[in-house]
Amino acid sequence: MVYKLPTAEEIKSVDLSWQRYLLPKIHPEGWRILGWMFAFFFIVGLLWSAVWYLGLPLLVFSYYFFRNPTRYTPKGENLIIAPADGIVSNIKEMVPPKALGLGNEKLIRISIFMSVFSVHVNRAPVSGKVTHLEYVPGKFVSVADKDSEDNERQLIGMVADNGKKIGFVQIAGLVARRIYCPLKVGDKLKAGEIFGMIRFGSRLDVFLPKGVTPKVMPGQVAVAGETILAEMK
Image 1: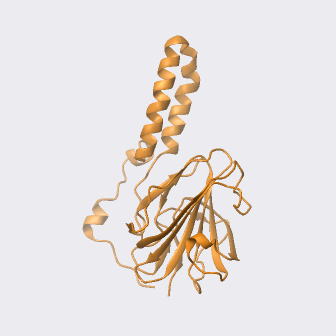
Image 2: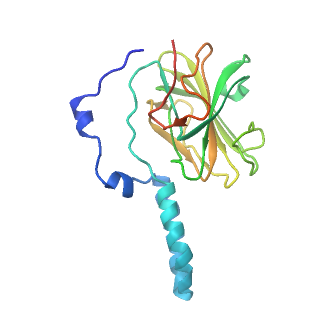
Image 3: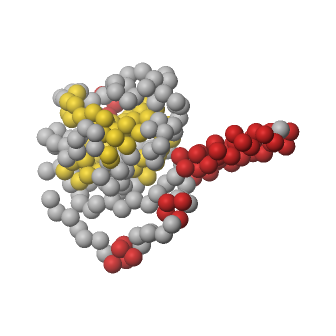
């Protein structure tokens, strides 16, 4: 495995200040929702001031939920990077959904479970082009330890710059069915680049190319844009 060392400019850009932890950046989609929440509590608060005892903690938690911290993605054209924060909940062989365009053979699927306390911004696992997209509506069902036929999900297929095909699936969970993915077929992404998010508890599955083995284990904590899931050879 070959890694490229960071440049001096990249090293200087690392944020070690207190703002990184107490005032993190917010995903643009979060500002819209926070605005609606503030307007609601402000109007109701004019009539009943006690509502702020509930509204203020909810606003603080929502700000924390939509945080979008800076991530530093390892460099290497054959690396597959974690697209989501959370726990590696499952690794298994299975036939991928047809909508991903990965064929009919079994591939290794890595599942990453995101709790309501995880960062929910999703990042591209590889650099390449989006070739397949399919949105499937669904129900309010837990995604912690089961397959996802009943859940709302967004399927995304890509061809990496090295020619390998990879697929990943955003799956909404029990608390809310809100997947945000503005991608279009033909879009090009860089590894670690933000492509969407899922709100309030969810899961993200990654189907590795044939012959690629994971470099993570169930129970391991994954960090979107930074943790190496596998290496394509």
